Amino acid sequence: MACKSVLFVTLGFLLSFCSTAKVNKHFFPQNFKIGVANAAAQIEGAWNEDGKGETIWDRFAMSRPERIFDHSSPQVAADSYHKWREDVEMVKEMGVDHYRLSIAWARIYPDGYKTEEPNAKGVAYYKNLLRSLRALGIEPMVTLYHWDLPQKLQDDFGGWLSPKIVDIFADYARTCFELFGDEVKWWITINEPKQICEAGYGTGVFAPGIVSPGVGNYKCAKNVLLAHAKAYHIYDKEFRKKNQGKVAIVIDSNWSEPASAKPEDQEASERALQFTYGLYGNPVFNGDWPAVVKERVAQRSKQAGLKESRLPALTKEEIKLIKGTHDFLCINHYTSHMVSAWYEAPVTDTSLTADIGVNDWMPKEWPRGGEGWFSVWAPGMRKLLNWLKNTYNNPEIVITENGLSDNTGTLEDDHRINYYRDYLSNCLDAIYIDNVNLTGYTAWSILDDWEWSTGYHSLIGMYKVDFNDLTGLGFLGSLLHTSPKSPRTAAWQKILENVYIKQK
Image (cartoon, rainbow, N blue to C red; front, side, top):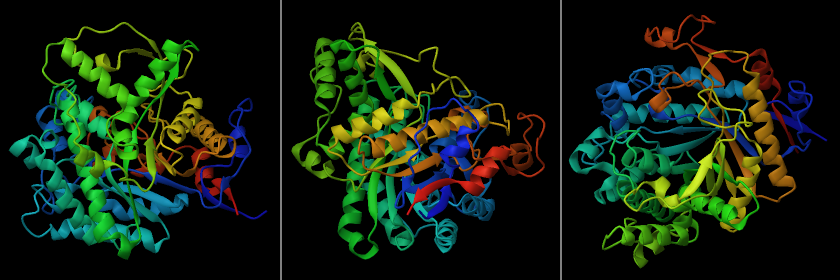
């Protein structure tokens, strides 16, 4: 049997870190793709250089620093705009098949509008990056929108709350397909609409900080789906024949583990999944909002005395436009929660949580991620993959993000190695035991980055970044390495050398 090295250590090697770990001994199929990821706003920095416009996260972090854990901003981040060649070398060193990155909309069109020629320096930056990856045999997986909306679009008409955004995004997408289509075969239109809409326009904890629970988040959801669909059809009609690429939307979801075999707890689990992944996945794969989402929001709206549902209806034309706009299914998954049936919240509570109406918690016996926000329960990965298979008619599935953060800064992070070992083992079980059509896995992240509302406190990279060296900021404490970017742990270095075996 001939093998090749691609990413992560073999299961046998990983067992040396935890001799009691139960992992299967399958190999990933030869055509399985393994990669690493990050996003423009989190690593590029150069927030106002070479013609780049201001984004909602630039404004949010710099005007409201108290909303960021360490009062930091993405002004410099990992400085990848200037150090992109080092990033490419790191990706090369890992031996991966693909690198998922995003294009900063405001680096192409500073104000977001297609009113003039694209920003030449921004275009050159991405062309150089993409061509360098391809020259090394690394397939770029490119996301058009990873949360960094040009601020001008938010100021002018409310960003994702307005239907105006749909055609403006479509124009931007067409430009990217035209400029970079020869270098890109994997396109992601929009990353994690749940975070864009719920955190950005519902709870307001993310940029642009709009607090409109149960109203703004649902308006945003509709506009995001329509924008995705228009971009998909543009590629399908104008670029697919020439460039032979694939297009999808990335949706994130926890796994909701039912607390018991009782029907009411099983139903609570299904409802939670339909309000998280299904809210965005069902229109794309099956057409229209999930039935349980429509029914619950309409019922609670009526009980509150509203004349129509807080969830905006999709017309027959919109359903037709959105349905089928996928070439594969993408899932970002980090954590699982336990859920059970719960009492009905007052109808005056219009939050997404109240609309879902389940009891949701992290069991004490499940380990936690660095900040304690994510519970580690690897079987949730396999269960979620099976739910996606069964709910959406066995599509091709690509995991576009998975990983564990740490806030200690240690280079001896065996807990993260164990996380990857166990989650990848469950991926193999899903492939070989459950016949899930899983064809790719992407680890988040290639290097430490600016992690949105947690700033530089949440460290999740395969490579440690010395943000003191890059930015002059002192809040990360003393340095363990003199190099700005260093692989974590001796074990990680072996992972980079010996990586997960794939069978020919």
